[in-house]
Length: 181
Image 1 (cartoon, rainbow, N blue to C red):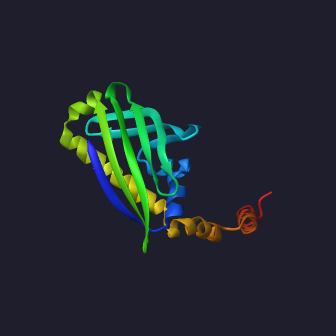
Image 2 (cartoon, helix red, strand yellow):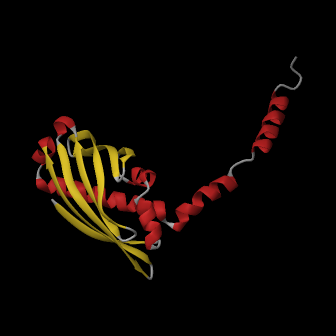
Image 3 (cartoon, rainbow, N blue to C red):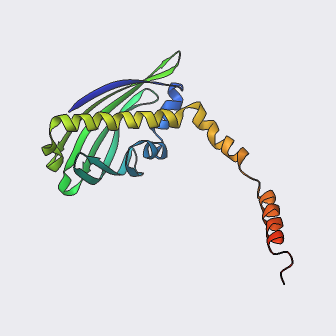
């Protein structure tokens, strides 16, 4: 299967490059990902749980970065096993180009699947792959957008201060138990 696409990102190339090389960002953005850990230089152990049609599977595998050209792009080679559900193998190339709106991310994916997944039919597989890619890039854009960077600060500012919470709790308790001995 082959896929390609282009996404406009709201950040400059260096910021997009940093996010594409951050295992925590990738873990949050990959649908169903529960593990994305550095195991060796440019090599990651991955774990993903997905459902395509009637087949649900947990895949464990490896992603290796190759042809690294900071901050312009790289290739990701992936190989994952999902038990009786099958396997997925392939390569994705990502390039970043600065423009007036931030930067443009262009990607190509070539992949092969086998096992029960391959028996589902190409139309279902293609649709699921496009949906997973769209979900990843939507999450990635949200994770790197300037609004996402300011969200934790806004949450901290709106959080109740511990001293105030204790005083409120203490006054509530004293009112509830007032007059009881």
